[in-house]
Image 1 (tube, rainbow, N blue to C red):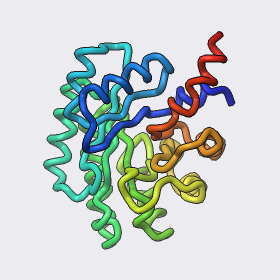
Image 2 (image 1 turned 120 degrees about the vertical axis):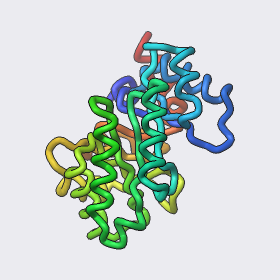
Image 3 (image 1 turned 180 degrees about the vertical axis):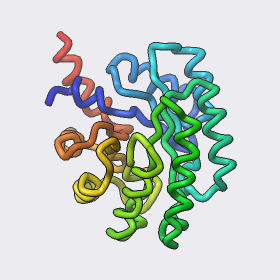
Image 4 (image 1 turned 90 degrees about the horizontal axis):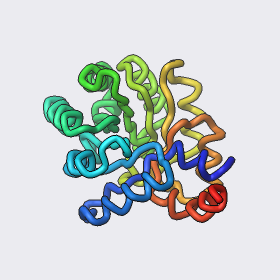
Length: 222
């Protein structure tokens, strides 16, 4: 798989609490240069990016991040503002505690509400696999599918572990046919990126992808 193809599946991510506008500009410039799928940034920067980069760059942001246990009204308000600012993709975190308590109707309804607000824009649902049992992961797949989301996503990158190939294989068995998969958290090498794509992911959340692949990309472009 060529570097260019791998990068076309990458959400070039910077969600650290310490990220400055200068840091955000750097990853935006990299995203434009290396044709990543999106930049994934904190919502406070979405409008500023759209004003600065316009149609050159697709912007994604997070909602209810990283814990997922804000109330639904807050998540809806956060989503509405991000969309108004120009975000094209929303990555929401589920209420993990509700899922673990078996309150799957609540989790599904929350996903459905955010997807209704997103409309044609992409909604990815972070289920934070590191905190879930296998049965809870299967339940999460059902919630994401019935809620009408576009993607199920493994991790925030802020939990106790990140993406695991075994979880992608489990997702593949239990998500509906319209749901895509995103692996995120702890993906640092070319081999890992290629393995997740080969397993069926159509999107990767990674902060290291451009650094790892840019020299190879530049060679391909010569």
